[in-house]
Image (cartoon, rainbow, N blue to C red; front, side):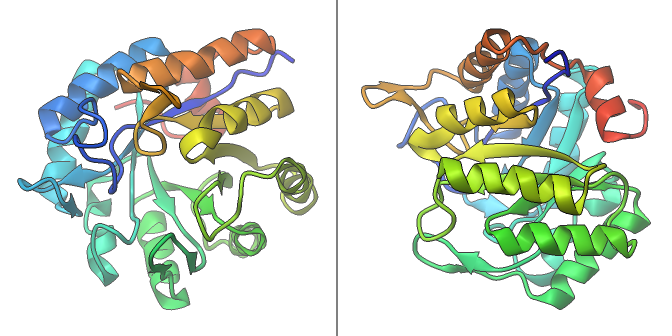
Length: 277
């Protein structure tokens, strides 16, 4: 298979702290430096969360603006993808950074359980976030924590409620949500082919499942995500030294399965994004 594989680096997230792994980048300057190293290792998308001065999750548009500026300056052509996830704010605050017009933004289209809470994505909020992405010409990366989310994404895209090319990410291994199960993964792939044959998809595994889900996705012709947001370890005995190390591991799997790692230009073409600014 010669189709290029897009590698997305999830640099920080809302949960990991330096107590979990000192390599987790918290400040904007740390995030830019960590993203640059991952970019050099093969990542063409930066999936970004920001933190406040106390290290807590934030939706602060000013911090997103500084991070986007830094990534664009140090990682030419890299696709910047903001998170609109619910740990960083509530209601419209979750989309407060969308006027910055990043190329992409994450979008959860349904609710599900997380380890200790309900991840609430009510229909009115989902519709508003999707409309804001249309308004600012931002392609969503739909984060599917459940089979129903794939069906919802396909239906929304078919009726013109999602901007750009449909791109769905299977998130597997979150406690109380969809486990990292190979039969389920294979069914997700078949479901995407049936409901949205023109779409692209990727997959992310949480914790120890990161490496196996990376390989499933790469071998099956999809794209994949790695990084310290999802997994702070290389294995049971070793912390990951950087985001770049986790991206390099995914890039090695691409080589194993005969797939080139997508350049930023190739990633933009595959996802039908606007050219780099």
